Length: 392
Image 1 (cartoon, rainbow, N blue to C red):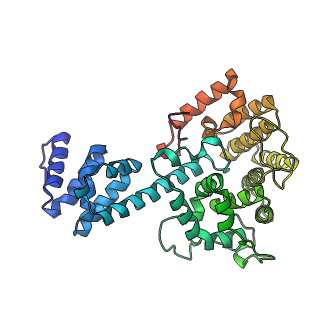
Image 2 (cartoon, rainbow, N blue to C red; image 1 turned 180 degrees about the horizontal axis):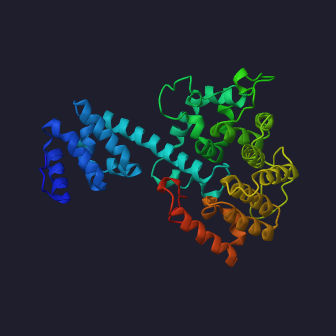
């Protein structure tokens, strides 16, 4: 390919010429690697046809390159000339890229929203492509139903976490990261989600021996249990909370205890409360838990966290602010948000997109918090920043 002494632009143009010529195959893989580093969307049209190459190294390199472009590759594939790629390969690439998009959205949601709180803009990134994802989301759900059933009943364990049981692959299981998929189906297709998950709770299911110390739920399972509780089926959420609380047995570590209490409070809040008070603005859904019990878990988490400056301290203050704003205490909520920012070097970046605090928008102190979290967000990886749609 290109020799020494060439500029970066010259090497890039030489690589593009190799892809246009299509041979020799031994140089195409190297050319793709050179091109993808430039991250020019215009090059996707050159890379895409290489995914159908008979040379495995070229096909795998081109596929990996397309995945590196993310959702930009989806739009570029739609613009390809019909003769550029055969229909079966195009379909396979689109399905792969759509799954990648969904997973990337789920991972961002997990990064900025560790407590799995629902908010109006939660699905914005998922909807940022011109595709109807409902069929894919349902497919992901159905593939995970056996694991979800086990986890709902406290009988699932993830072999990735056990060093003596080697993982079959490095890809995370859907129930580890798929909370956003469940949230999307809960908002768009609630009746379908209820039908697909009907009868998954087993009566008097016994926990397996490896869950003796308690059983934390995976993120997708937790999202599903909270959805079912908001829709009158509280058994899964009640069992989930009970199993999470059992993790506090024989645990002298206050930081661990703080995290468990916080997770319990967040799960209760997402499942809904018996006394939703606020008729307008942000309010909590109706469900099986008491607001006073949620607040008790939050206060216990704060007490256990102490002055540790751990993220759990910031998250607990944030959750408390959400509970207060739902109860109509705007002043108390604003104070807790300020405490949340000061409690840790890793504050809840969710504040930048969380519409729960819309009633505080006119407060100068609140705007200062938004500006600060925006600055903090610039320090983290792009995939861990809140996604902001242009029309919001």
